[in-house]
Image (cartoon, rainbow, N blue to C red; front, side):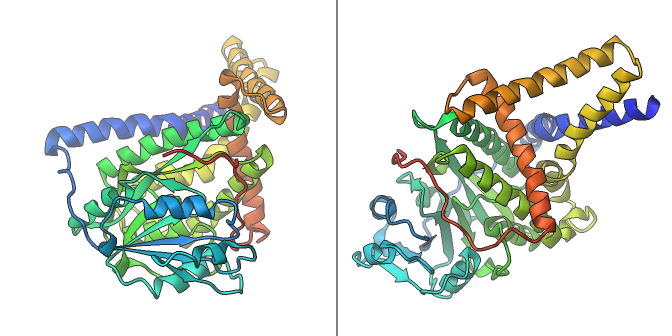
Length: 395
């Protein structure tokens, strides 16, 4: 009984620390740092920037993307715009070719997003490169906000904020995705305040061009690897909530699940590609944040959810007492709520108090699926166009 009790409490501790405790600890550490050293000065600067956008078969959205891009508040002479559309078979390249301010790079061969970005980087001529997705819209001051941080020589990259707009028909997956990104954005803000953002999101981030290293063609999470490689060279990745990319939620529960599985498979791949970051003696400023924010979410935390349930069931069967019976009842109630949320999500019905447990279980279940896809080498690095709600997100 002692073994199962220990397993239960260790599992619950890891789960609680990963999804809540780290955020609380991070907040306390940030406040202590600000008390001792003050806040980081507001950034200022306006360096020449290249905006690089990889687009694959985005004909139904590309006109809105172009209009949004050309309306960005940054001096025209300092903003180079490059679209790379390798492999696109629809009208995306033809639509982009109509705009003289845009440099279009197109190759009929489809080799994946990493290969497309590597190819396009050879054409970049400015000291700062901003990456963003083709299915997102940026707020007018996004480039200005990101670029200002590079006045600090220690900054190697800047992560923008991802916003998910839940439309009236977006369902539980949209609400859950939006809530998740609100929490994730707050963690990124605190991560950056303590030392550095733990991985930029590909929807919007900027890098010091000279620090860019070509991404391996088999890389699934290019944004993650690009930003952490910059960390490994001794530079920080800052966070700028004033620069945000807005996109609508996934078109369906199946599309969102497929995306989560791909990210999870890419997460396991990234852990292998970034093994040195697990060594606190080599990267003392990064390892704690990296393991707490990223590694645990993709490894121990999902496993501990299952172990906590299993251990709790064994203890109750062995007659461990009222406390463990109540704890098991609470776990079963949580998973019951998640299952109810799932059933409603299939009918495109959103219930506020059910989509939170639903999305939590949904994400963790995708981690298991992603893990087995990673082991079986079944997750292709060739990016697929994400299906999103057709409503144009506002900025």
